[in-house]
Image (cartoon, rainbow, N blue to C red; front, top):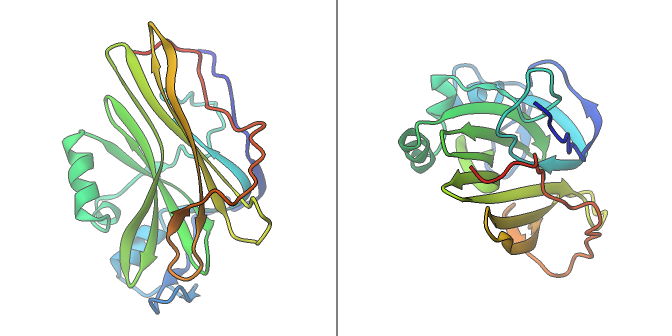
Length: 223
């Protein structure tokens, strides 16, 4: 099966071993690489591979070829790791009959940001989490692909430093695609991470170069 390998990201350095991920131990974003034994947060963190990225396209590939280079393939999440996810997220995943994967951890503001992949019969999704005050907190849904009937809903994200302040910014594009009408309702949104509370906030102040900001598209008709 042909895949348009739209991997428009640049990996500066990628750690190939399991992550010794720093865990938030103070509640203020300060971290230590010395993992405390037998805590769920630590076990959650170490299931992610650490990757240093400069420009990362986050997208859903609905049919991952075993030979394909897909950074967000991940490994199936253990019951222990899943137990650390917020209850509302776990309930949603259970309802969808999903399989959850730990993918990569990237550097945020004095903390790691953990990307999970949810694989469900109809809707696939990628989410971002952080460990704060010993708990796993959901920060943002980064990508999804939801296809049913004659339409597909899709969102992709790009993580990059738009204004070169050394902190990542988030660019999101979303669309509704139908078999009869093509693409409709396309939207673009830009966020920055507030360094004071480490939350994503929408902004219109960043000068985004939209050239190359494109959807991953396998060329399929809606399923």
